[in-house]
Image 1 (cartoon, rainbow, N blue to C red):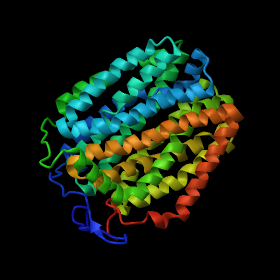
Image 2: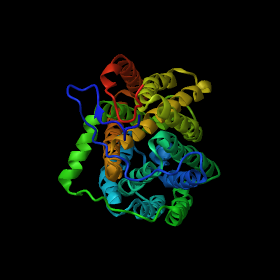
Image 3: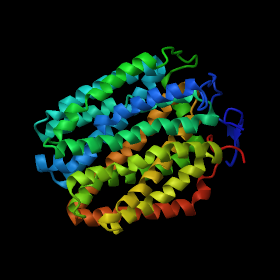
Image 4: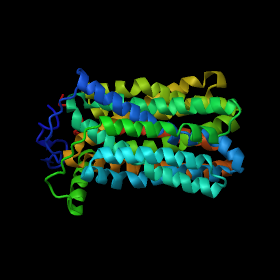
Length: 427
C-alpha cells in the first residue's frame, strides 16, 4: 500500500488522517523508460554543476587558512557563513518555487552561482571572503528543494527513492571530482583561487541546459497559499515523520561539523599533505555515487525508516575509525562514512517528500534543509572553538566518539522511531 492509499497513521494515541495529499499528477516517468532516464540525466548533470564551486570550501580550507593566517575559530566561521545562509534561504526559495515554478528558480540560481564563484576567486581579505560565502550560501538554496519537487512530481512513490538516489549521484560526483581537480590545479602551480575561477563556467552551462530541458508548465495549486495554510501543512508533516527526521538532523549537525574540519584534522593531526587531504575528503562522495541510488532503491523495498536507521548506526563508528587507523588505511573509514551519509541523507529527503502535500513539496523540503543546514552551520564553529581550546586532535576524536554514542542510542531507542511513517510500506 502506498502513502496515497493509506488513510491513517498508526502507532499514535489517536489515529489521525494523513496530511499527505493524494498525488494530483500522474507520475509517468519511471526508471524503466526513456522519459524517466532523460529527465534524471538532465537534473543529475545540473546537480553536479550546482556543486562544482560551492563544494570547494572544506577541502581547500587548509590553503585558505594559510593564505589569511586564520585560527581554527575563524576557519569554522567561514564554514558557518556558508551553511547558515544556505539554511536560511532554503525555505523561502522553496516556497517561491511552489508559487512561480521550479524551472526559473533553478536556472537563475545556477547563473548566480557561477558569478559568485568568480567573485570569490578575487577576494582579497578575510571579511570579503566571509561576506561572499554568505551570498553563495543564499544562492545555493535555489537548487535542492525545487529540483527534488520536480523529481517527486515526475516519479511515482514506488520508484521515487531510486530516482532521488540517482539524482544525488550528481552531487556526490561533484564533491569528489571538484576537490580532485582543485588539488591538481594547485599542484600545477595555482592557488586556492584557481578552482573558483576556472570551474565557474559549469553552473552557467547547466543553467542553459535546464532552461531548455526542464518542464515548462507550472500550475499554481488551487488551495490557499496563505501563511496559515503553509504552517498547518508543514506542521502536519512534522507530526507524521518528526521523530525520525529530528534524529537525522542531529546526526547531520555532528556530521557536518566533523566534515568541515576533516581536511584540517588530516593535515594538522595526522600529517597528511594538504593536497592529499583534499583528495581523501572526496572519497565519501565517490562512495555515495553507488550508495545513494542503492539506498534509495532499498528504501522503496524495505521502507524509508529502516534504511535511515542503518545509516545513522554506521556513521558514528566510521568517524571513530578515522581517528584510530594508520594513514595507510584512511580510505577504509572514509568508505564507511560515505555509505552511512548517503543512506541517511538520501532517504531522509525521500521520506520528507513522501510526507509532504504535492503542492508544498518544495516548501516542506526547503524547511527541512533550513533546519539541517542551520544545525550543521552551528556545529562547525563550536568544533572550531573546541579545537582552539584543547587541540584539533582531541576535539575531533572526542566529537567522533560522541557521534558513535549517538549511533548506539539510535539502535537502542529505535522503537521510539517506529511510528508508521509515510515512506514505509505496510509489511
